[in-house]
Length: 241
Ligand code: NDP
Image (cartoon, rainbow, N blue to C red):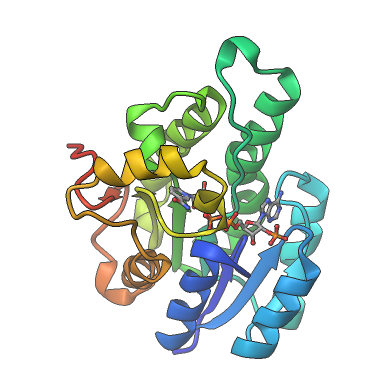
């Protein structure tokens, strides 16, 4: 059966790899982006995956966007809450704008994107929700009080939502990637990145495709018994649980 999967921030980086993996697994995929139209168009041309532009931090835009995807692609069976940003800085120098932008994009988006799809999933008796958190939501990170707070919030949200929907055929899981080779990590200063790679037991950054493969599993029928899980995928950098 072909199911519809919606991936936020699905036109580049980890989200793009997730969208491609879901398509390869047989889903009909829609990918969203914020503002990088050129990148999104190139992704659409390369993969044939439909792309949609809206801000995941904007509640009304998300409701309208999900309705548009439902009309043009189909009701959403699989939602991957992947879109995220960083605005790093030590907390004693951080302004409210840095805090708020990260909390809105990374955590409020759990509400704005999940709320419009969850009732339909419950009614149809099937749903897969995969939320992308981070190693730094598990362990904290210097210069990322905003990001660590948001990503830890994603973990709590995942667990509560998993409990509420377990009887309805809807699973809710969370992936905590370590450092993955994307534009987000390319923004980390080279010296800092060298230090980070030195802390990764497998000795390299992760690949976006490795997160894509895990997400495709979580979206599959085979993963029906897995819900509320927090999956650590970080090359051994932080061994949680
Ligand atoms: P990128 O910066 O490479 O890509 C981010 C994607 O999210 C883009 O498609 C971007 O759209 C979209 N996006 C950003 N803000 C918004 C918004 N307000 N509304 C809609 N879409 C938005 O990020 P990564 O691929 O590196 O990260 C993906 C996720 O994985 C994030 O949640 C991140 O926190 C998490 N993560 C990343 C790690 C890493 O090492 N890279 C490690 C752990 C977690 P556009 O192209 O238009 O800007």
